[in-house]
Length: 332
Image (cartoon, rainbow, N blue to C red; front, top):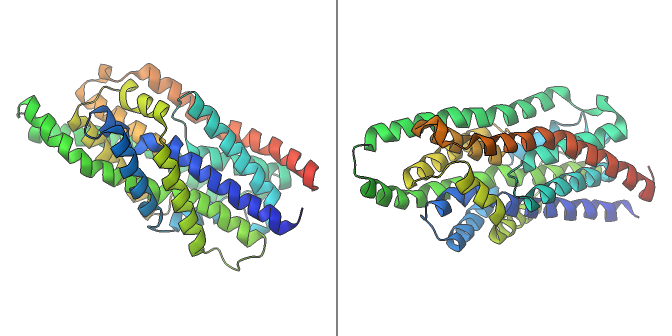
């Protein structure tokens, strides 16, 4: 198979990953507003799709981190490595989507790249300083979201807690339109850039571009793939995120969405990839804990944590296995 043909396979798989990321992570943007009946499900999905598309065009800093901070140089990867990484990430995303587990697409793609690169060139090909920064942001972001979700909820209760419940519900149900919009935009601003970074790395490795800059057609195609995937909606995960962790009122949904959007915007500003799934889950847990610790269904959170822990190693193993298969088919 000609190299350029394999390169287009990479582009197709990256866009497929972005599309799957869209419907896998729809819950991140709209679960709270749907569960509190602030928005009708279909309205929420279409709102998220449009704002995910616009958010994906916001910047390319996260894409450059993905493209430049995982491997020591573009010469260390080829199309076979990236195809293997993407298949590993896609396989894990589809598996967790099927079972309604809100795992991380970000962890899946990082793990897939790591496994395929190690299988191809060995562990020395990984840029450890860059990976440390990426993994640290993935680990710390949900903890930050949990703490600040708790604090924002306490602040809102202190300011508005004396109002009658029906007044609070009516007012914050309207405010959720704003918070859900911010969350959808921030989701696109961070998540879509991961596929952009993978495609740009593949183009650089194949000699189709000279520097690690995201071409406009890559930005637009990834934004469109994310938006279209979001429009499909991942209803199983929406149910888990919206009702099974903590049963929310509109004020809780507003606090969780606002907090998540702020954490993700901050990460995007500093060019850090985060798991939007983890950030939203952490926010919901923090907001629920502000009501009372027992209001959070920690058994559900425990099963989600298990999926989070396993995602990188399992997608890495899948990426490595697929690399050996791809190498056998197309030649090392």
